[in-house]
Length: 174
Image (cartoon, rainbow, N blue to C red; front, side):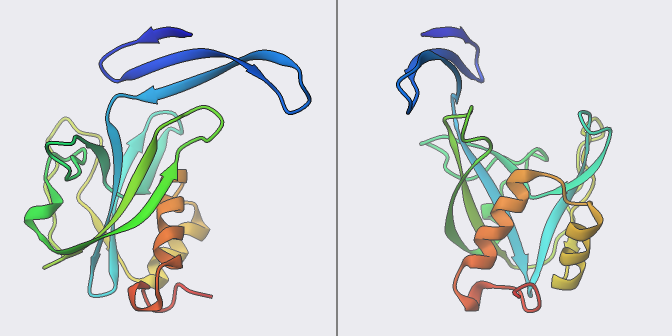
């Protein structure tokens, strides 16, 4: 049963039966637009965006992410720039879910090989900074140090690393 909706999505309180046969209710969220996570790559380096996240009270590095529509399937990252202007090639790596127990909608993960390691300029009111291009060693250190805290970014990075050997940055694989 739908209990709430707005321009971003809908919240449902579903009647369910557990594997043990117990009846109950379960909350489910459905986004109105499909999600997209963009994994920018240039010369083996990846770009992550430093963004202040209010819930953790700190900056976290994450891949550009946004939404897509059937008419405009390129990502609309927070900075407002569309990656396809700079892309030499794109590759769909797969899908990830923010929370499989609550959020119905998936996010596509798209590798974008860019022509140059450009530095975007965020708008003054945004809580994001210019992208940081990280080598494989820098990426590994950012994970270990906790600079990368976004679960969707970590999941997208795992898809990237699991892609064929020719698509992995040297040094990140184990």
